[in-house]
Image (cartoon, rainbow, N blue to C red; front, side, top):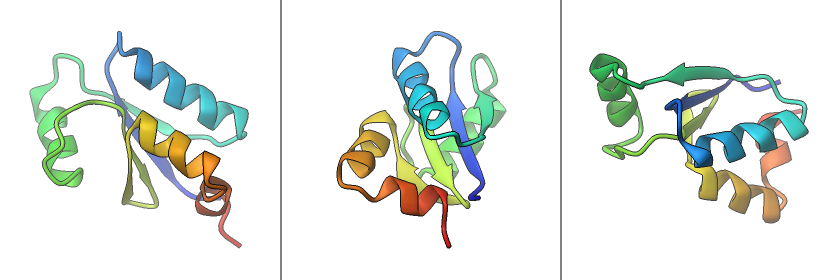
Length: 86
């Protein structure tokens, strides 16, 4: 199974939606809460190519997007292959 990391904040509804989808898929993930943690947010921004909003999602250290991005991958039938590579 792929390693999934999601950067979140405590009160982000999009973070909740993204985590819900991952849980529905039965995928474990590491959640990094960047609330009031500027050093962790800087790491997230750097890894996400300058994107500053939370719910940045990485699969095996590859940026795959935010909540909209992960749902788009799922609708396109591409998310399962990323999460469970053969």
